[in-house]
Length: 473
Ligand code: UDP
Image (cartoon, rainbow, N blue to C red):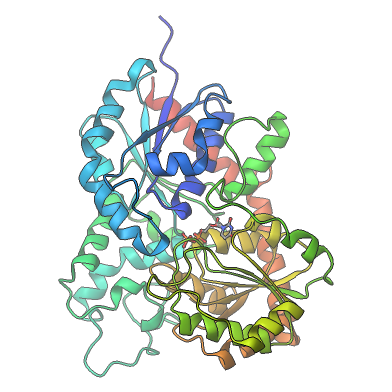
């Protein structure tokens, strides 16, 4: 009898920043000949339009399970914890069942799961190897791993009378630049027993016991942090940027089939009216503004950003998601001067294909919340950043962008209009802006080398596939 082909089940948390890179990895594995099952919640399944993609690539299938919330629950960006908590309460049995009963398909060889859903580790007890996909970057993961060390050293919670700009000492390799304010947002607690701090610390520690750990990055970007991580998690695969790998594979296999490969397939309806607007602008003259899929702004914050953009000397393309504003803050009236300035020099849209926008020659800078996907996409496209991190790993990413890679500025913890205007101008014009552009062009080239034939990401991907194949023998 023929040996069972390797069959991988991937299960991301129901958040775009997690679904999107794991879907890309799923497609890459499928194009490389593995059987792939992509498991999501029913809500995400519908949102991806997965039914249209079903069976379009041999060996790739979607499955879905309920998240336990009522059908009319909005599941908006600001409610993501509610969604994950409900899923964690609702789905372990269903997930376990899918792992073992495989419904007429080949048995699952290996599960690639999202580290934020600890219950998915159950595969280990079923003797199915589990690999964790880490949707953030190595730089933030290293700070997450150091949380117990920070608590033990008395650096978390912050001591009485603390100064947010003081450097922290207990994250090896980052002593020279990581301030209290740059630690992941869950470190800003009153007690070390804080339930979110403890849950994240233990989910992070648990990842170190998985069969391996996958990052969507190239190994040269965060080489120092990776070296630290590998002392605890020796089997680490850096297979990114997955976007670029997927495009290259699509080209070499001549395959446009399979699940969709845009940066956020079907999440919100993409508004393409900004493309002719961008075409009409001069090279590197536009600031692209987007805060990802989860960030929420209060109305005062929205207005400060808006004034800052209207007053800076540059044109802007701004993604204002339907659920960007805090729930209680309806959009309300827009002050006349902002409406006028926007007509003259701005373009507002609800959602775009971000990869396409970042790759447009008119885009000169990216005002971003520093989510890891956005960071990697901007580096790949060679676009410098103005960072306004919102939470979690974004606090660390933005510090790396400004102080380590020197490809942007970090306006963490403030968004008053004067700061917004000043920071945008700093990245758009003058000598420092030129330097940031040169630096990000260098990193973009470095990332390209990682994904080229023979590059580190290709080697890591081959190794991952070989390791999965070996599990099925
Ligand atoms: N994105 C997009 N269109 C938009 C805004 C965002 O396609 O108008 C995508 C972006 O390309 C990225 C993802 O949404 O892949 C956001 O992920 P990230 O990790 O940056 O932030 P999160 O949404 O998880 O906070």
